[in-house]
Image (cartoon, rainbow, N blue to C red; front, side, top):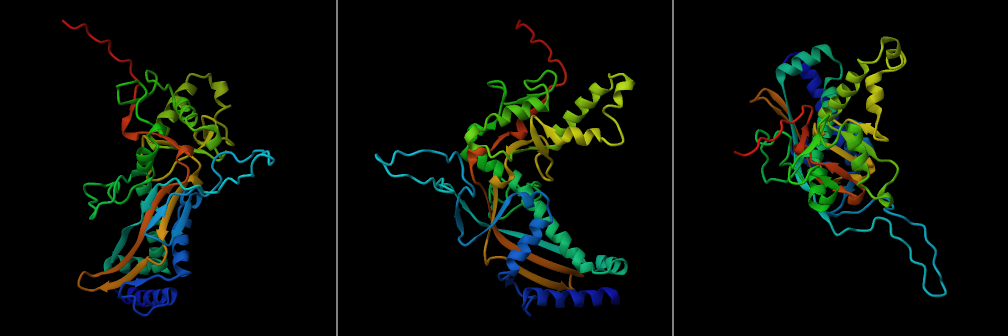
Length: 355
């Protein structure tokens, strides 16, 4: 480690002591409020998507699934000569519970990286902290859409999409509202087909159909279509291929300096604004108000440790917290099973008569 990196390291360790109000950063310590709230807020602010969902501190290890807004209708009229007025409760509990489980976010930065970065960047450890927060945010999103279970010990080689880190939103829908998860478009096929020869001809049809699964009383008006990259690319290619058959004098209607056609196509599909989220399944589709997706962390259980590990020639930053995922109103969410999507762009061969 060069001298500049050593100075930066000493400054970083001093800043960590001041920020977290502890001298013992080389021992694991609990991050106290309000610093804990600030830390999780910084993680949330590093992701445009996380800023749109509900990130909630929880006091207990197990949380009750509660809608954070008024689900369903509220307007009514009561004949008080016959009965008392009854108030509709906010966040009516569903009886579904989620357990907050330990999640570790541990980062090692080799001395060779510190040497290079400290020579080219001022505030290198601020950059490392920002990158760490960003990665935690991306991992939380990844778990939310891919997590199927919480293993006692995770295996990232076997589960590269963090399927074993926690029970995410997709799995919660499978377990608690399977009627809102489309698994096949033709009975017995186990496939959701899209394309010229599919049950859905295009993404517009698919989005609109899945949106109609949500009952009107459960819609908030803020629903978006979260679309996987493969589905979106398939849609864009299909749309642009149609433009190639338009006479050149009409192409200017679609391609002008003031209009980015691809962005225009991506902005709204099936009457809904669309959203591409990093870590979302590439063939997935979920219709939901982002505020209906909840992420809990257990208050007072966020832990940190900073270790200058000379034996491994690296700086190690250990972070852990207890997390859980939940959906406020399951009926207000609908999706397709990503693994079942097939692209039917070629005409299927006719079945041969059995001999």
